[in-house]
Figure (cartoon, rainbow, N blue to C red):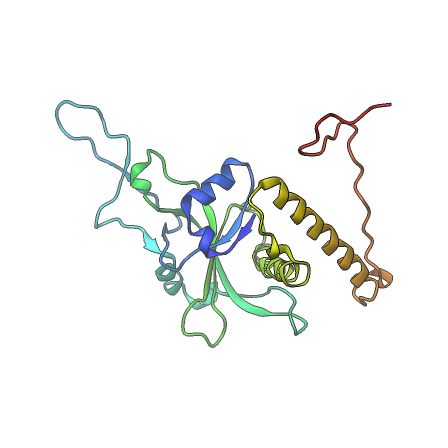
Length: 235
């Protein structure tokens, strides 16, 4: 799942993706707080006397989380690596990235266990006074930095697809109020866009032999379209 910082900064959004057993690479704001590598929130000390022992995590002035921007500015120069991200008007776009394993800290004082470790990586292009973008990701710890960067930058390709769908094929022209109508409208727009992509690839020098090999998926025997009044007939 890919998303910009408007969505990725929301803790409940990320938790919802994880609950669906999906992995994500989402942008976050520079003021998002995390626990640096190797640090976790401390459990609250039990008070003397009677009463239930504390179950929630605890933080104080001597052990606070840090903003991702402050964490990035505190890194030494050799930690930053130059990585080729995505294709653009030039053959390749390159920038500097640094990555660490952190734990999100948003309101974890209301939790009994710290958040699991995630990837945090930051982009600091050469010549810029400070880092420009930040991402959080639940990709496996063995995932290479190059693969993570290219996956996160792939969101810009999706943004371009959405722009073409809205401007050229009328995806944003739907004015109905029901889900079924919107579903039909979006399905026809996506089918038209898929057709245009295939036709465009016939003249693309980057595709194999000038054509993009796409095949229609086989329909499962028990498939029933959404909203169908009855099941498909079987032979």
